[in-house]
Image (cartoon, rainbow, N blue to C red; front, top):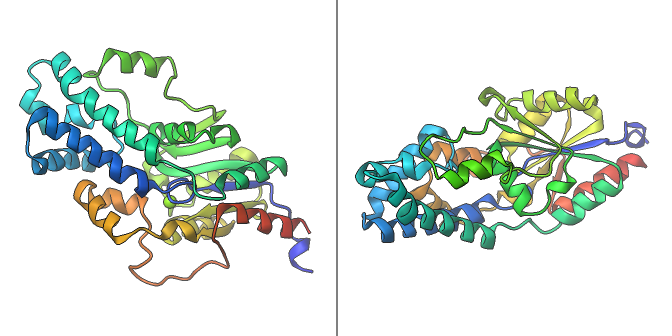
Length: 294
Ligand SMILES: [Mg+2]
């Protein structure tokens, strides 16, 4: 059979947001909780808070920029003294965000089984995400799946600004926010998918041929397009593409359009060719690998 004569799969490169967990399911309540906290602590109207934060998120190209509050107009309003602002405004907001993240950030069904199955088969696991390095590492760590990964390739992280809580600076230095992933690589912005450069770099670094690798991802236009350009087998995590319309609306209130586009696949825009392999659960990637092994 032609299929079994193909090379066995030695590594799986996986997207993170929308593939390992629902990014929308946690970011929407987390950002909303943060905004509610800011409304309470500053007495500012919600619209001004949302717009001030959006401006910063847009500038950094991510709404996971950890220092958005002190960089926003809200700080201009109250920033006369950083210490009081930090204690009375930033901390409660960060806590609200973290609590919601703890509550709502969950791996999709089948992810743990899939990762365990890959590990037991000796298949290397690499995460390739367009999220910034810091938040990507924290998500893997919080989900307690960092131990499965050989490497994480993320976009460049952001430096800690001068105006920040001393404790945050110390924890950053001590590596408190880092994951257990042994190799973490920061890629330039130009490597953002659908660029195939990220996949190509993984292939070079792991000394693998394209036919020995599978790329799993929820976004047809980004993950699957990148897989095709790099010549690796694309496996579409179709289960990650369903976002309830209500969440889309709530996300649009709080998240800059360009940022949302980066994180949420919008398969409704236009039909594009669907890949040969679509899976209903991450664990199904094992079937493809086992079939290939014969
Ligand atoms: Mg994704």
